[in-house]
Image 1: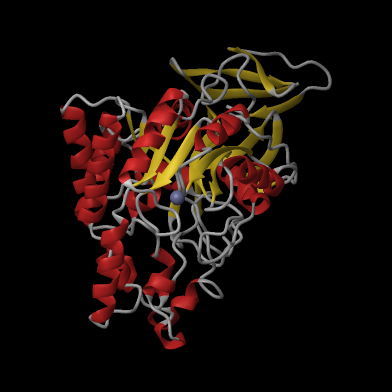
Image 2: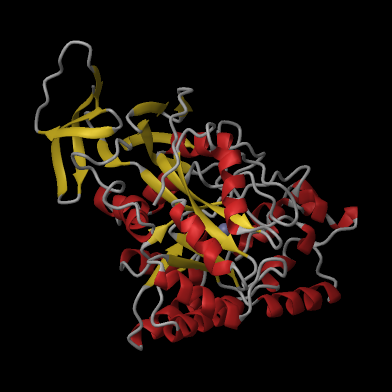
Length: 459
Ligand SMILES: [Zn+2]
C-alpha cells in the first residue's frame, strides 16, 4: 500500500487535512490518520495539496496533421504530461478521409498501447460522413469512445453543415458529446489569400487571416445546428475570443442546453503581440502559429473573467507540438514559404497545471483548479466518478501539489520533445511534487521515475 500523509486533501466536499492510501490501482482509504503497516510506502505531503490527477481533454500526439507529424509521440507526450501533474489525456484519434473510424481507433491503439506514462482515452475525429458512418460510430462506441469531433475549418477535415447536423444527431443518440473546431474554413481560405496578396507572408499574417469573427460565426452556427439536433451536447473546443464567448452567451440566453466550453492556457496568458517577437531572424512568431491564433488583450481578459465566472468549464491544452527548427521553419519566407505553410500547433501538455495555478494565483484556489482541470473534464468526457475526484474506490490517479515551489519554465529543462515552449522564462508558482498514475509513482518534481503504467480508459 502507498500512504500519502499529512496533506491537504482536495475532496469534492472541500479541503480536509488527512491521509490517503492507494492500493491495487484504486484509492483504498481516506482518513484523518492512516497508520502505516510494515512494507507500506509512505510519502509526506505536509504543506501540499493532494488532488485528483489532472485530465487534459484535448491533445494531438504522434499524429499527422496534414502538414507534418507532431514532434511528441505518445511516449514523450504522456511522460511530459505526467511530470506536470496530468494523469489522463484524451487524444484525438482521427479518421482521415478513406479511413474508417474503427481502423483509426485501432491505429491509435497501435501508437499508444504499452508506451504511455499517463492514462489515455480517445475522441474520434470524423472527416467524412455518409453510408456506413452510423455503424462505424457504434463500433468505436463499443471500443470505449464516447466523444467525437468535427471541424468547420481545414479542407481535408471539415464537414458541411448538413453533415454536421447528422453527426450531432448521431452523437446525441449515443449519449456522447461532439467537440467542434469552430472556425469558418471558407473564410479562412479567402482571408489567407487576401493577406498573402498584400505581401504579408510572415507569421504576423496568421492572426490576420483568422480574425475573431471567423471563430464567432462558426460557434454561432454550430450552436444553431446543435439546437436543430434537439440540443445535442456540444463542446466548443479552444475558445479564444470575446466575440465567440458572446455567441455562446446568446445561445444560452435563448435557452439552449448542453453547451460545454473549453479554453486553453495560451488564450488566457498570451496575446497576439507574440507574432512580432524578435529572434530566429524574425521568424520567432512561428512558435505561436496555432489555430485559433493568439488574440487581443481584451479577449484574454474576457476569457479569464469567463473562467472565474464558471462560464468556461474546462481548460485543456490542444497540445500539438512541432519543432521550430526543421518543421515550422518550412514556412520561412526566405525558404520560399509563407505563414500558411507553418504547421499549426504548439506544446503545453506539461505546463498547463503550473501555468494556470500561477496566472490565477489568488483568484482560483485548489478546489477551482481541480474543477477546471480534473473534475469537469471527467464529467464532460464520461470518466466521472471513476476519475476527477478523490474518493475511496476511485482510480489512484493522484497529484501531490506543492504550492510553495518556485521554478522557471524552459525548453532546456522540459520533458516535451520539442525545441521550444511558448512559456519560456515563465516564473511558475507551484509544482507537481509527486504524481501517481494507477497507484504508481511516475514523476517527482518534474522528473519522470521511468514507470509507464498508463492504460487505455474505455468510456
Ligand atoms: Zn486540437
